[in-house]
Length: 426
Image (cartoon, rainbow, N blue to C red; front, side, top):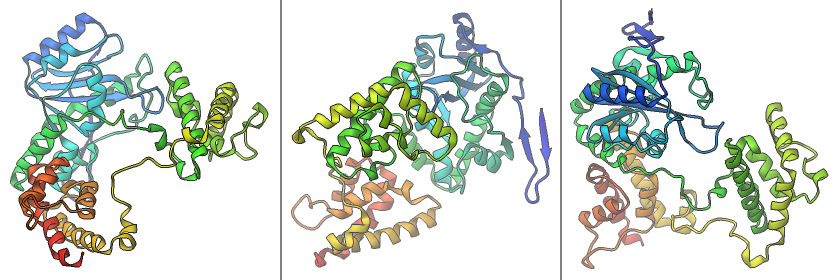
């Protein structure tokens, strides 16, 4: 069922409210899964893939629904919970192009199920390269196919069982037109001369592993800037670890055990008794968050007090550094004072990159990651032959940082020029 709504300018936008072939049944058993596998195998062309997680509700980023659609096979909604894995589905799709929107969000949770793309097309990244001002799925569909989708169920708890029919309808619509969108985007990228750039980006995404294993994840607690010393950092670490253990055991989001603001408040006050756990003034901004914080403090007061005691008893030599040592350059705002020549290189390159971004209608951060730009300009690489730095020298360094050939070709000369123009100022 669709509703046509006239727009002030341009062609009318079709509002899609349910799948054109009707809502498929949810796949929850082996027999139905085999039926889905057979149908998808009989389909042709790329396969649209999406996954729904329970972010903010459950521990981790597990998939609680997998949606697929392929020409000739229709749409399939698979509940992964009853199955140990979906590796057979992953094997079936090996070598087939997956079409995803914002692939980095879904690749890790699908990999947990034994599904990993060997070829893909990311419609969100494709939209960035094509120069769309808005790259969300709804915006891309309106731009290329004059279709709009409702997004009212995007942040619900997908671990809910049974899944309500309106949620399933929303999930099915997310893959309804992904392949058609892929085709329209591919044609646009081809017409702009960016098809090869996109292909290089998509190939790199097939190796994406996610960020779950970053070191010292407790340092990303919101509000860490309030921690002023190493003892405070130790308190955050111990409280964070206690919260993780509770969240993992209960299978809930850590923020539902204790919000970050309350954890930081505990670390700054370091209360020693149950009566002093709750501060005189709540660190939370809304009543619902205040209520959640109070419940978390009282329900697990023994865990928080134990974590505080452990951090407080650590000898000074065992305290973590206030900030993690990094080989990254200092913040750009500090360059002018610490190294004026490097600051001049960066200023020149930033202007040239902005011009290049406008010329190709590609966001600056997609031309080359800002971190790579800063690293190369803060400490330019040494020439390979002891003479002057060549473009090939710089290209090798950029490639080692993960830059794709198209990025090296476009951005390499800009960085090379910025380094050369200020070589005599060093």
